Length: 92
Image (cartoon, rainbow, N blue to C red; front, top):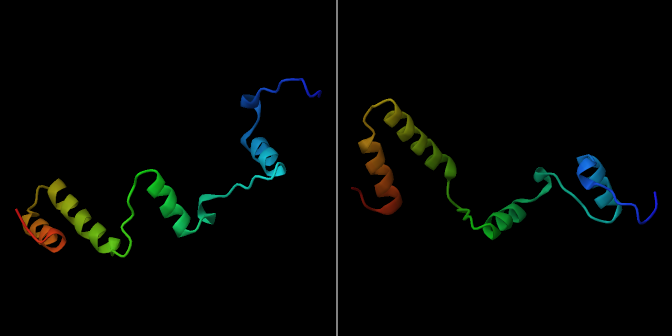
């Protein structure tokens, strides 16, 4: 193939493009290869906030329970009020 011959990049497979970039000195990573700080920085650059130091599992469990109670038409007011009081220091 000559240097002046045009290549239609859309016809190349993903792995061909990745191999070419690797050959040119670019490194590509799978998402699991990034450390936590890199992921947080990327999310921050995209305008998202990551709440470090909070126990997200407790929050998730409480909100999930409220969701399911509400979906089932059961009372969730007391649980919601407790959650809001714990997080905001006030209730409705």
